[in-house]
Structure formats: structure tokens, C-alpha cells
Length: 337
Ligand code: NAP
Ligand code: FER
Image (cartoon, rainbow, N blue to C red; front, side, top):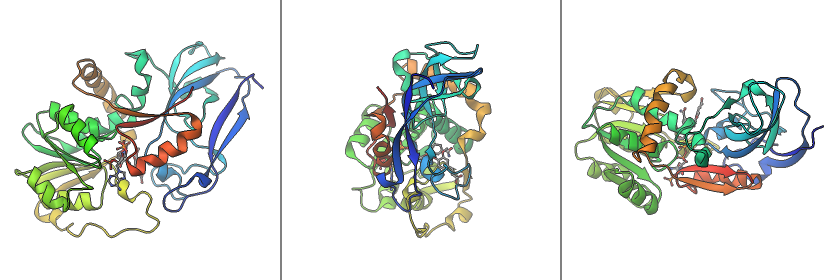
């Protein structure tokens, strides 16, 4: 055994509906000494993401379900404490897939060394420069195909994916309308991110009417993060040949029983709307192009990032659950000491 112990969060039962603390367990385990080809890493930040809810199901669709009574996984950024591999040295910063634990031993080739453009902003590699930021880039540009002057509607617009979609669409010359669940989030998008109009879906009344009022020229691209009433409202207001980048439908992730669908799907036919589902992990061919555009945008202040930082692995489950009630303003991050 090494001199290190690690705290880990295990999934101990599969949630039905909204998960609760009882579905998870915090354990402390001893770590082995790294063998040839392995490193021991201390994580500084881990990501909690909506997709993790899907992996808690037995019948996860696109990837294997989390095993029961084992540590979960996901994106994290850490620092090498011990190395038995030539490719990584003590102190190297690594992006890894070993979230939900504060330290771990793994093969060096399962992680990538980061040369951060700003060492004070490592958590950006879990947000704007990480999986969610890349999702916004792929989804908007490849599947939304926005043209200058067109109108883009974004749901969960202040979140990790949505805030980047809004800002990239503005940089591409579009009119942007967002929907969010609080006035503070709306104010940030309007005043700091240059979004043209924001709807608070909790207080706006009829969402289709609010969207029609915000989008007098109709909607050409809908970046779908929420589903349900948001999809219904978007279809009502979309223009012929509109495109929907179907990224996620978070409103349904904790449904124990399927909810009724939008009542207007036939509009897809008459309006000749294209709906494209996509999974970011299929689009690694765009990663270089993404970083080449995104890093200068961040450095030039053209893309702003917000984070909600929750401290301590013992609060990671709460951070994850908070995604489903909008507790995060921007990217939800868990910071380890
Ligand atoms: P996020 O937007 O940072 O956090 C989730 C947000 O969703 C919450 O802050 C909340 O914001 C909103 N929300 C939660 N429940 C809602 C409900 N019932 N109705 C309306 N809004 C609700 O999360 P993210 O990581 O950026 O993910 C956004 C979407 O992208 C999710 O659907 C996720 O599954 C999807 N995604 C897909 C891919 C892919 O490859 N396809 C990759 C990454 C993410 P409000 O306060 O505004 O309600
Ligand atoms: C996500 C939501 C759903 C995501 C992936 C999925 C990578 C995939 C779902 C499926 O295959 O059923 O946020 O992010």
C-alpha cells in the first residue's frame, strides 16, 4: 500500500425518480503503490454533469451503466503525486476520467497532460474548454448550422453548455434568445454575454407566447437542452427549414414514468424541420478546431465563463442533484482541498 488513502463516492442503489443521498456512499480506501506504467493522482476539481443520471440507470443507452458498489467516474483535473511512467512527472496537471474520488492510481495512458493556458483556471477544462464547451461548439456549428442574421433559441441558456452556445452564436452574427430559471441568470446573459432576449420560463406564463414575442422573425435554430414544454414552444415558433440540435432534455431525466410528449410534433413535417441528436464524444475530429477558436475567444474576453464551485467531495452528491433544480449558475464544479 502507498502512504495515501482516497475518498470515493460509490453508487450503492439505482435511483427511481430524483436520486437521493441513500443511493450513494462515501468511503475511504487505501491506495496501492503505482506499478510500472501507472501514476498516483490527486484531483483538484471534478465535474458533475447531467449525463451521469443516465449512467445510474441499469439500461443506460449510449454507454455502460455505473456498476453498483463501485466508484463512479466522470471528468476531473488533478496533479501527479507519484509516477511510475516516463510520460508523466511529479506535479504534472492531468485531465482524467476518474471523478468521484479525491485520489487514485491508474495507467498514465488513461489521462492527458494539460498545459493550461492559465494555471489559475484549471476548472475551465471541465467547463468552457472541456466537454460542455466542446458540446456547445459541435452542437451549434455542426448541427445547428447558424447563418449570420438568423435567430437562435437556447434552453438552459446560462448553464455549462448553454452559456457557450449563446456566446458562440453571437460571435457568428446571430440574434440569440435564451431561456433560464432565474432573473439573475437572465440579467447575466443580457448584460454580460450580449444575448438579445431572455425568457424566465418559471415566470413568463405561456412559453410559446413568450418565445413568439421575443422572436418576431421566428426561430431558425433551436439548441435543445430541456425538452418538454421548451421543445413544444420552439416547434410552434420555428421557421421553415429550421434546425434543432438535440443535445439533451434535462426536464425528463428524473421521470420515474414517461411524461406526455409535445402536442405539436406534426409541425416538423410542414415546416420541414431537421432534428439532429448528437453525442459530443463522436466528434473528436473537431476538437483541434474548437480549441483554436475557443482559447483566443476566452483570452480576448469574447467568451465569458461562470462557475458554481462546491467545496469538498462530501458535497459532490448535493452538487450533482443541484443540477436538476438550477442551483448552478454556469458550470457546476466540485473543488477538493
Ligand atoms: P447545466 O445547464 O449547466 O445545468 C443544468 C441546468 O438545467 C440547470 O442549471 C437548470 O437551469 C436547467 N434545468 C434543470 N432542470 C430543468 C427543468 N426541469 N426545466 C428547465 N430547465 C431545467 O448543464 P449542462 O452540463 O450544460 O447540460 C445541459 C444539457 O446538455 C443537458 O440536457 C445535458 O444532458 C446536455 N448535454 C449533452 C451532451 C451531448 O453530448 N449530447 C453533452 C453535455 C451536455 P435553470 O435555472 O435555467 O432552470
Ligand atoms: C448528456 C445527456 C445524454 C450526455 C449524453 C447523453 C454526454 C446520452 C444519452 C443516451 O445515449 O441515451 O448530457 O452527455
